[in-house]
Image (tube, rainbow, N blue to C red; front, side, top):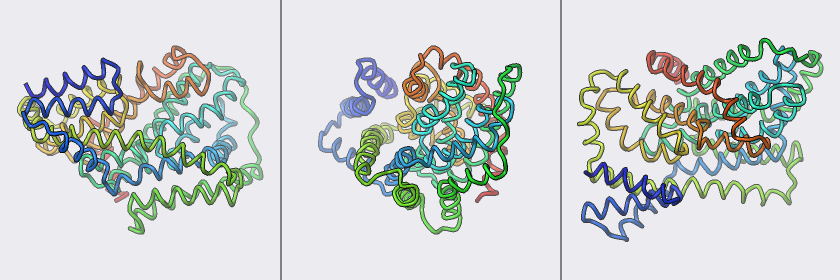
Length: 425
């Protein structure tokens, strides 16, 4: 009965059009009422405690770094590097999108920010070159979701806090799966564009390549600073967010001088608004997470799925299918916050490595950002690129299917994730 109260109140509130953060509060209040322990003071206290987390400070700093990079010219220089490196290959602008997405992902950690930057810079170029508009937009959307899978992933920060799993280990474990997603998109784009007769631009000279790399050097160095700093124990993931934000501000205002002092306030306000949405979601979800534990919903779920505990692979397939279904209707952050406290006891009971589970869970949630009808990244690409949702949806389907195939390969062969993760540890 408790499970149905939890699910029914949450879905009912969402069906009424209540924003997801407030729907979580409604769900928490309904659970408290059902358990005969309703107390507004306890509700408020859990909301405050939910946002009072040191690791979560990484979220606003990484979001600020992403905003600064887009406005300060770092993103444009990254795209230019990709253009001079692979733009001359047949279907080159598609490969440029994938390479640029990987480089941007290692800078911002935000799928929406990366997709917006790529849509602004590359979609007009691809359309002008003669590529199919829908397919180009679909590639940009599917490449943008690499950001939540590789460090510095904002999604990993949220999951690490919610699941009490090492954020640094999640960061390192996401590197190789992120590369696999990029390789999958590369192959899929090659397969789809192999018959197109679009003349690529001429190969750039070594001097032009060197010039582009030199101009983007400040942006290209940042991922190495973050990875090496985490690996050497110089700073924590939270401190890495501060380093990224300060570094991006310095590069944008002092080195490249594209971010004028008068615009810094506007950029900070934009990052603060996005951060406020994420942090309030986390705070509201803390109420539901606490009540889920009090009501022993995880124990009930474990009892329901007891037959699957002896087969971790079958259990992972069932969980991945569940997350796929939820991802079609819900954004990544609320999905993480709602499902993590329910699924983690199940994962631990089955003896599944929580870091491995976190990587697969994040990949699934990232792909959920491009699954219609709600896909947030799809809406971002459609809005920024001024293209209809129908066109973007049509174009993204083959790339989305390819990414789901890779995800299930990782479910069937866990060593694809765990072995490279231990290399990076």
